[in-house]
Image 1 (spheres, rainbow, N blue to C red):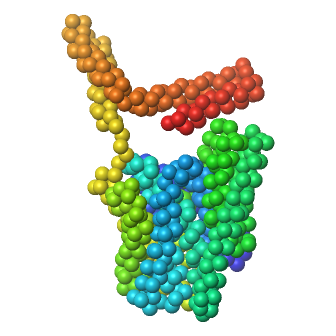
Image 2: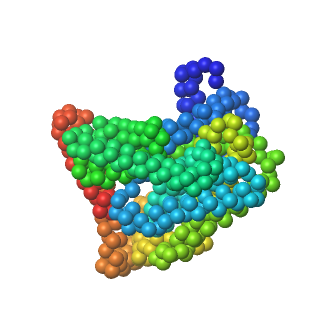
Image 3: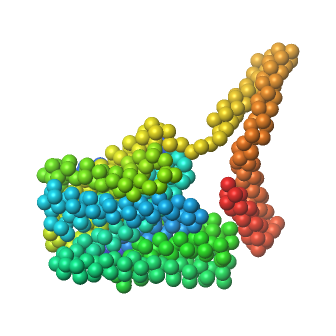
Length: 525
């Protein structure tokens, strides 16, 4: 790019947002994982010559632009949003599988892919272990969107998200060491090994210290304010500030963001945030994460088409099984000693260890003169494409085949009773409609209504018995009904405000009370 035209950049950005939002909306409407749809459409846009989109493609696929947007602009937001909403209690309950996968599994995958790439592909040591670091990072976004559409056990979602949060930080550290320091450490022998280990500890520990300090500091700050727009700004400063500060001192920005967001969302949420503030902060980052993910996966699709995969097809065919084998060894090997983790869940974690935008952004950040850069680029993009499209599209059928669904006691029986109840009530409503239109006499209509009413009474008795056996079913319906009444209360306050019957101060106070009640219902649920 010869000159910086901010107006033109904004126009291109807006076009990208419009395309991403449209694809995401359609995918969600048809209950399909939107990240995979975005990658496929992005690749198609990249393959075909669409004159109106050519400037957009040229701008987005500029290596420096892609790298900046993914790593500096979107990565802190995506990591922060995920960690912000991950309760310490869930992390504590699942700490064994999460940390075993994030550390033991990532190292195992890194070593298998690194040595395998050296042996089978004859890559240099730095190139082999750079590729290994890239392929050890997992992206849970596609997997979690599939989980939501299918409905799997909450614990499985927590494990795969928790693994990815810490695994990404470790993969970035391994990538930087492999790309820039590994050869010098190896040349120095045992002292080099010590230096490498110290560098790893320093980068991780400094990231933990920076993230922990800023997370604690901003949590204390929230105690002195009860103003959710300001506290949203605090969260933005915290996520990006911890990332940039850690990177500026050559620490792990990823680990800093994750730790800062975990502390801010849990400790800060407990000591300094009202329920209204927590709800609004979560809503803000929900929107930011959806926008960031939509743009990221569309950009990955566009970027993939720039790489010439044809000449390297033999390497690609060999690389994909190597990465899959390494992931299998990482999952089954690291979780071998955790007896409480179901085997079916391990299968889902194995096949669901998708590669994504972080791998693409990191490989594009390699210096142009890095030995083997083009080969690493081709292999990384090929594995990411295979991972998102083939593994991503086959994950949902695999979940169905394995029957990995949450244990919802009584839910099938309840759904059956509700379906019958709705049928019969609709039938009675139709009798009344037809009776007026066709002048059906009372004796005829009353007999039929009585028959349906007897069935309805029987069903209501069965539902009451089911509620006695499974109180959670009744509580779930109660929560739904209570939330809808609170929404109606919110609209009633809005109406009074619009009619100037109450003041802004009174409306704000009532809105906050209603929002707190909604949050309390969601927390209990």
